[in-house]
Amino acid sequence: MRRLAITILLAASLVAGGVFAQQKTGKNNVYEELNLFDEAFERIRNDAVDPVTDAKLIGAAIAGMLSGLDPRSSFMDEDQFKALQAPADRDADTSGLVVTIDNGQLKVISPEDGSPAARAGVRPGDVIFAINKEPVYDLSLTEAEQKLRGPAGSEVQLTLRHGAEKPVDLMIKREAYKLATVTGRLEKGNIGYVRVAGFDNGTQAALADAVQDLRQRAGSKLIGLVLDLRNNPGGAFDAAVAAADAFLDKGEIVVVKGRKPGSVKRISATPGEIAKGLSVVALVNGGTAREAELVAGALQDNRRAVLLGTKTFGESSIESVLPLGSGGAIRLTTARFTTPSGREIQGKGLEPDLVVTPLRLAKLAQGEGRREADLPGALKNPDQAAGKPPTDAGAASPTEPPSVATEDIGSASDEQLTQAIDVLRGLSVAGRRAAG
View 1 (cartoon, rainbow, N blue to C red):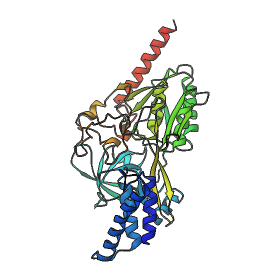
View 2: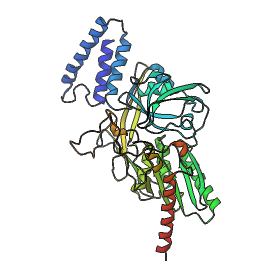
View 3: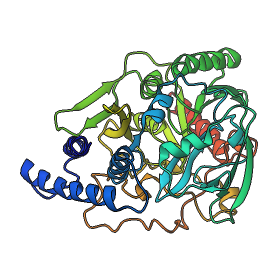
View 4: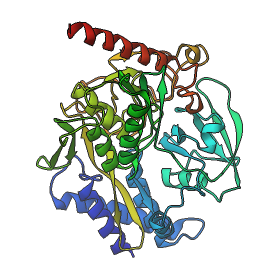
């Protein structure tokens, strides 16, 4: 078993770039460092006050190694891996929260539209301290996600904090719901509003249907589209690429970069786009994350949409699940994506073309939760200036605007949507004047 542990850790260390011997070169130095693990393994195995199995020690060692890489890399034992492989029953087993880990704290990226968590008022950036009164500070991301799941009809109690407010207890009843990734409606009779809340295999077709329906209802009066990507935590990568392609007739959509210099993949748009030249304003905020940032970045770089709102979350990592011989697996970040022009999203986010803060919410909170760059071990942005001090992980920035609650998106009090409509009207007037 000890040889197995050394073999596993050696392979993982080579994949991760030499976790144990990052400053050394050559396999001999790696083996020297692994001897230290071997010695510690034997000491714990023989001298720990309570007996511990070899399998538990090895699992803990691998989990610890992965936890030092970035917030999303983690170890899954055999049961967790089997649960991941089981067919998803998203209508019955989740409260609708998309979360990340920040220094042992569980943080909400965004609740899904229509989910029990969204209806309960959970917002992007909320810090969860306990699930069913059990502290979550020592949980991995996989363990925390499992605790949030449960059968439909069951309840989960969350102890959380909104911004700088005092912690509160929320009881959320898990209910059957289906995420509608795309919804649409007419605003003011001549502006199409399209809400994209996530990305799955049906998103591209739903987008096309929504825009076509808006055209039919508005007739020849449609002057522009609002594409709402706020509080969109991402989803399927290929589905997000297809969604961006739907609004682009040409140009690149995204650049995917692996570890090796030669592993760069550029994905380009295909001819034809559903908006047919109409002006587009895309709404973004701190809950716009991952694949949603892919779409926003593609539209911004290709000058196909005006981004309006606040800075996005800043995460562009792509994870791979790598099975292990023990029956478990590791979830490892193996690539990241950038915008077509090469702008890094990871740890930085996307700045909107027009910054519009929800003023009503700004009076209620000091700031949003931290972004990907603030998480311990977060993947670094290559564009970050050398020597720049890291963000203080223990304090929220007083200048960061709060994210609008998912249930308030698109409502009559949505200031950002009102501003987007005004921008589209202005672009329409300018276009008519330019046409003579």
